[in-house]
Image 1 (cartoon, one colour):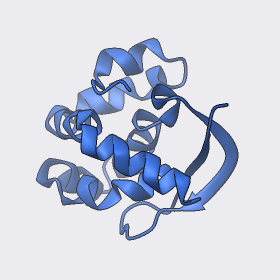
Image 2 (tube, rainbow, N blue to C red):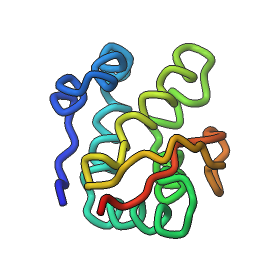
Image 3 (cartoon, helix red, strand yellow):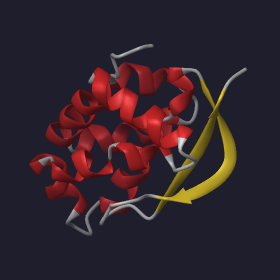
Image 4 (cartoon, helix red, strand yellow):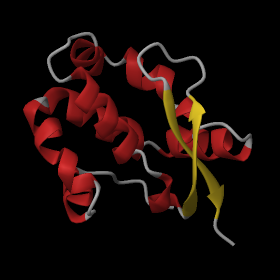
Length: 123
């Protein structure tokens, strides 16, 4: 299971590359986000949420929102929506061997995130 998420990973992803400028605009928040995503325990939380039929982001939303650098961005109108979208894209489960379902699910226990992708384990 990959545990090193970086801006370089996003840059090489067709969809992720469209959010790189937003992450670069808020470098402290981006660093925090990639540290959260690179933590093995958080990868397990993403997978557990998916196994329970929840959106993957439900597994780490409270940790993302608790980061002071990320909270500053999410709490502003200036780039908040685009940064929220970047968080969802950065946390895509394909990097962990999962496949999109095409169904959005509510992000449980989140205040700044509404819905996010649901995933199933690849066979």
